[in-house]
Length: 93
Image (cartoon, rainbow, N blue to C red; front, side):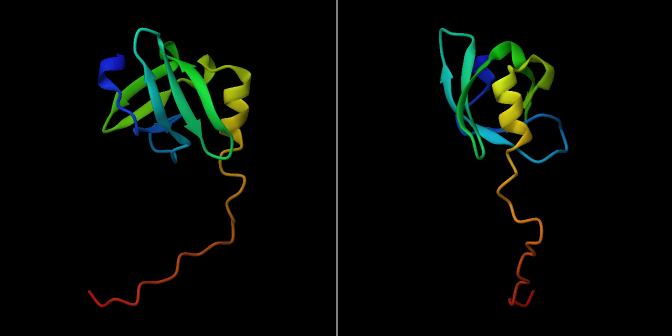
């Protein structure tokens, strides 16, 4: 499974949700990845916690992650401003 994962792939906890981070490093020879979780930093994630790999995405099985990683994922969006609205483009199409 590690052969299908590349550094930089986005990390999700389910298809259709927003990404929570990205693959920072693949530890060849070890069954694990180093994953950057937004607002929390790098975490080691076992390959056994990977549910799917497709479209340059890694989907994790939330129930197979340790408590520290789950808590980091729960707070990945905490620093975002919920009132932010993207400025409209002034370019004509």
